[in-house]
Image 1 (spheres, protein in one colour):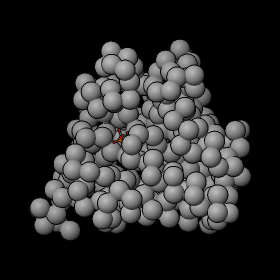
Image 2 (cartoon, helix red, strand yellow):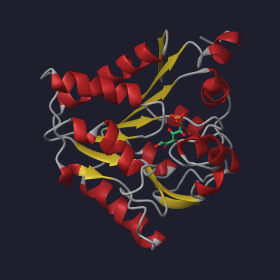
Image 3 (tube, rainbow, N blue to C red):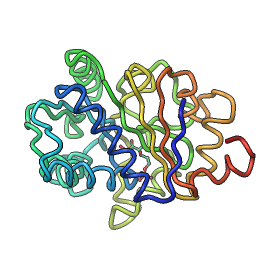
Image 4 (cartoon, rainbow, N blue to C red):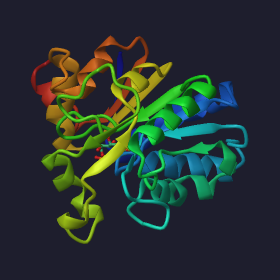
Length: 247
Ligand code: F6R
């Protein structure tokens, strides 16, 4: 695992975008695993800027998103499919048929999860998986206690994740209680993982994930067992690791 330090969110976003852009340049038809949330917005903005300058071509890139709220579709501004179109897909030359996101509107959870696993397999797996990290160490929607051996599945959101995500909804009651998410095993199968973390509220999660034991209680800690993980974090997110004198 390599940790790249950034002074702030802006520098973090630029570094992360550089890594993704290198992947796209090296393999123009690569499969990018993508994430939503606050963390990757600056990264997507940077990729869009380079695309608009003519430096980055997404015509052959394929994407698979990590997760989607169960019950939400593109008509909902809080859905992850809406987020992705708003922040990336509609601003670059991604082909619609190359975009894959769990279908939150499929009420048949087992069928949707099996379909999504088949999509990832048919694409030949994920070349680069971008991840944010939850304050409780979750990756995707794999909450503490999630079994490491799972592929795509339907989960119940933890109280802390519902609370953290309520900022995107009118009230906490509107936050969906379930989501479809790639499992830890899907993420661990990615050939490369890029985890980004910004801000002091991620400091404890980063510390526990990369300096503590590998345990399902801290889902991101499993990444210690992945052979190619890059963490890009700002000083605030690294503050707990710094305080322990570990890097
Ligand atoms: C998003 C996702 C989540 C987020 C995590 C951090 O697709 O899977 O695991 O990466 O909740 O969210 P932010 O970046 O909003 O702090």
